[in-house]
Image (cartoon, rainbow over the protein chains, first blue to last red):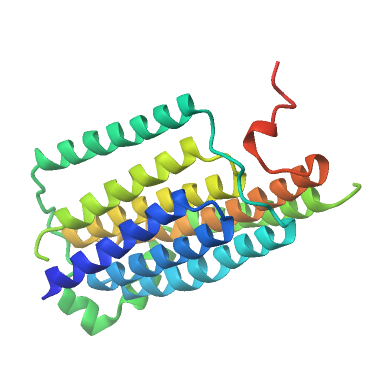
Amino acid sequence: METLFFLIVAAIAVISSLLVITNKNPINSALSLIMTFFCLATLYVLLEAPFMAAIQVIVYAGAIMVLIVFVIMLLNIRSESGGRTTHARFMGIATGLLLLVLTVSLLARSSLSTAGGNINSALIAKVGHTELIGKSLFTDFLLPFEITSILLLAAIVGAVVLSKKKL
Amino acid sequence: MDSIHGYLTLGAILFAIGTIGVLTRRNAIIIFMCVELMLNAVNLTFIAFSKLHGNLDGQIFVFFVMTVAAAEAAVGLALMIAFFKNRESIDVEDMNLMKW
């Protein structure tokens, strides 16, 4: 049952991501990308990471995609007249397919071994996923967390500077 | 699913689709969306491995990837607006000011 559900969601994710790269109209691409993000959030729930599913929907499908759709509408971009030259298109598709063959063949001949950690579904159900993430974030990963705040500050300043008419 | 092979394969497929999109499209915003797609493929792989190893470190990494993607979206879209003001286009083949 769970396998069937995974296959359906994975098929929807692949189809909508193909639509992202084939649609001529940027708005249609953006909506397909939102569909892909929702499929990935569903898969995160299957992988017992409900907090990640929540922030996937809120941050990606909510904040980032709203920003992208807003910019597409603001710029009033017409659909592309044509793709790149056939040479570049052929090489791009060939590169992507080679990458896919490489990763899938590496996956097929690999054996996954578990390094026994202590986070299992019983613990997640008992303590709560959000609490586990929060504890890990504010103890083991406190320095990266603080550095992230500096990165966000730099991004705010950068966005304001770039969109100002005159400094 | 017991094994996480399906998730890893799906991540590989989405990453390859994102790569093809980055290399074949000309619209800068669509290229940007394909980069987001690649980041999400990597996030899926991180969370699958986090489940396999019974360890939350992978999910913390996904948290940081999302933060960086949000910062990147803000700066990248501001850059595109600034470029569009100058050139009336966001086609990447028009971005040739620094070409020698």
